[in-house]
Amino acid sequence: MAANRGPRPAPNDRELRLWKVGRALGLAFAGAVLAAGGIFYTLVVLLDFKEIDSTAKLDAKTLFDLVKLSFGVVAGAGALVALVVAYRRQRVDEAGAHREATRLHTERFSQAVDKLGSDSPAVRLGGVHALAGLADDAPDDSLRQTCIDVLCAYLQLPFTPDPGTDHTHQEEHHRYLAFRKVRHTILRLIGDHYRRQRGAHRSWQGCDLDLTGVIIDGPLNFDGASFSGSRVSFDGATFSGGTVSFYEASFSGGRVSFGGATFSGGDVFFGAATFSDGEVSFGAATFSGGTVSFPEARFSGGDVSLHSSVFSGCMVSFGGATFSGGRVSLGGATFSGGHVSFRRATFSGSNVDFEDATFSGGGMSFSRAIGEAPRGLPLDNPPAEVGDIPAEWRVNP
Image (cartoon, rainbow, N blue to C red; front, side, top):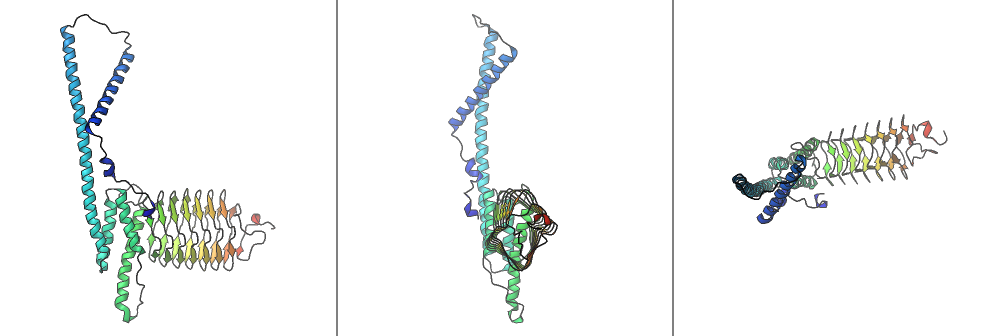
């Protein structure tokens, strides 16, 4: 995902773009003269001077005042030169310190990446923690993003499936469990860092997260995380076993995509999550087995799409969810087997779309739902799979 973004300028690139000394001094003197003139004119106006007395001869007091003024101007000019030079020196020192920090970061980064390629699961685990620590301490956002990208890329690598617990494959089974521990540790660290409030130390909120095609077979906790201004991709990911929780997560701005993802077994939980001012896409996702639930979720603003998704043999719940504002699309979705519940859901002021959805087998319940009927729902002759439709929604009650 990081490849889709334009390159971010590092802070030292900006710091080294210093003006030449002559130009800097000239502008500084010009600014000082303008400031002094402005102050002088303001004082003249405030003190209400009508005219300036002229004298035919130069007395000793006036001469002494002129000498003091001359020395003051020279001293002020010298101080201005010293200030400009000190400022430039400070900027150059900061740039040098940043380059040194970047150099040390690069060395540590290389060592951590080498560990990820080790044949030893323990060494790989050490590399994972080293990369997470580097992301926390990165001198700028670009280097932090690079560390996150490498951790995501590790999760995208193919791995040997579990050979089973048969005693003839005991060594391979233990090796599989050890390397699975490495993957699960990365998932845990990602969740931990995205749950931290943006701007806090060790927070990764605002950074892009590319988990395209990843097999998520362990716990992934995004409770309370905020996905704002970043791009998060679970495209083609497989959620099998384990639990993925987005409890009270906030999806606002940016883009979060589960396009083509497979939810099979395990639980995916969006309880009390807020979807507003952004795009969250489950387009062409497959929900089979397990549970996917949005209890008490709030859909307001933005665009939430489950277009062309396939719901088969699983429990999908929008119980108590509120659909207000924005657009929620289930157009072209296929509901076969399993059960989809909108019990106690509220539909108000939003565009909820079931256009061209296919219902075959399974069931869908709108028990105690209130508000406006979703668009595209077959209300005049509802199929047997769609039950508990509120009486006020029916065309021919």
